[in-house]
Amino acid sequence: MNSCKTEDADGLRLVRVTGEVDMSWSQDLRKEILDAMAKGSAVGVDLSAVTYMDSSGIAALVEGFQQSRSSKSRFALIAPSDAVRSVLELARLDRVFPIVESAAAARGD
Amino acid sequence: MSGPALLRLDLPARAETLGELRVALRGAFARANIEPAASERLVLAINEAVCNVIRHGYPGRDDGILHLRIERGRGVLRMRLRDAAPPVDPAGIKPRDLDECRPGGLGINFIDATMDSWALRPLRRRDGNVLTMRKRLRDVRLRTGGRGKS
Image 1: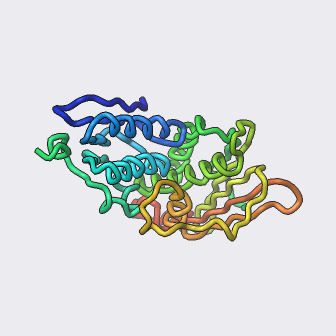
Image 2: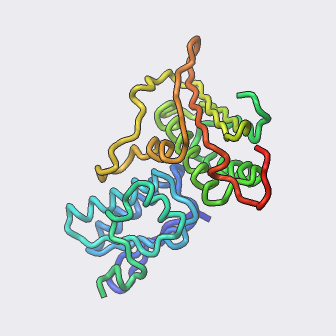
Image 3: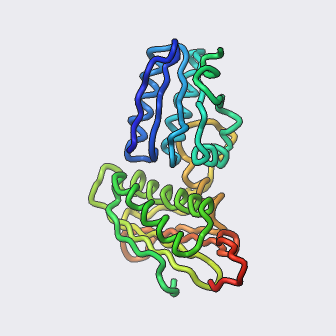
């Protein structure tokens, strides 16, 4: 089941993503991330339940990251699955994105 | 391409069919005894090739068709993706600089990093393009202890 939902986690806008992210719905993910960024100064995208991600999903994450840099807000990928990590490595973005293992770390606790 | 087909698919060039495509690809690569991580890389590369056709070959259209054929022979996997979109200039299709952090344009990089070789050519007498990709089987097959036939 593919989904992305945002919740408030002690001040962090936490976007939880599930399933296979591809071009058929990556625009939904993009909108969810940008909406979360518009509503909070710290956004974490939990990718632990993502079983596949293509370049359109990566593009949605890059847009979020770029938006965070221009608005000087906090943005992190949380616990990316092996499937996501391998695509990030392929795109050489694993050392570009802030990657943390928990929502607490994304908040900077 | 002349070997027995591992997979033949005619599919609508629509993003909603990508999930179905990946299921078929994973099944075909499992039958070919491809190692799971390598299979996922091949699935990603082919998914990206199909996305490129949907996005750039048939923009704003939902009546496009794609033909995918995968076969193994002489130690290689051969993958052939044909469309009926307007011809593209192969010289303009190349990987981008990954030092640029920007959204989009990664599909060709994924194909280029995954395949041993690939080539895109427009058809001569009608609309359409053919993308051919090759991958050496010895680099992606599960090792079973015996000598497998390709």
